[in-house]
Length: 222
Image (cartoon, rainbow, N blue to C red; front, side, top):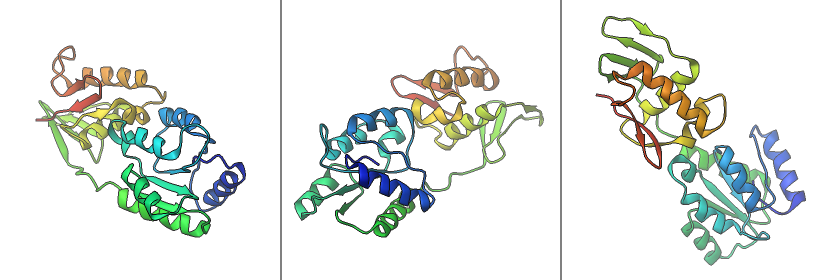
């Protein structure tokens, strides 16, 4: 939640936390950008009129980010409730628009509705073929054709699952950060290097776990 009104921000954080949400707050767009660079959020609630950068500009910046980071749903929360203002907010990439004053319960219902709409469809959980190996996405098991299992760490399993569920599509490095105990792009690179040693015939010339320059990584199973 990004709003320069300290009282409203604290009240809504307390209210939403009581309804089961985990809430982070920022008083301005600059602080929000720093949080967004480090943490992946399910939804953003943005005020429009703030000192410095406004909420619409922050929404445009968010939509310009690659991968899932730029697709996070946005609810605009502002005193500017004219139809033209609402249309402008939606054009900038917002998913919904709630004018102040408002009932906190309506905010909760709108947040829940956005999260339902944005929930990803269940991904196939069957095995993917990687040369002589098969990775069972549901079970998180990597085996060869004779049934022998290659041991994967928990982080390697999580990383391979994420990539397998987006097979043949580039996945942003920052969207893979959650697979590492250390929240950094460098930690992801280390996990990828280790994983290549287990799934690639030649880890120095990867065929299945490929680097997408400027983006991240892509799994290309047979």
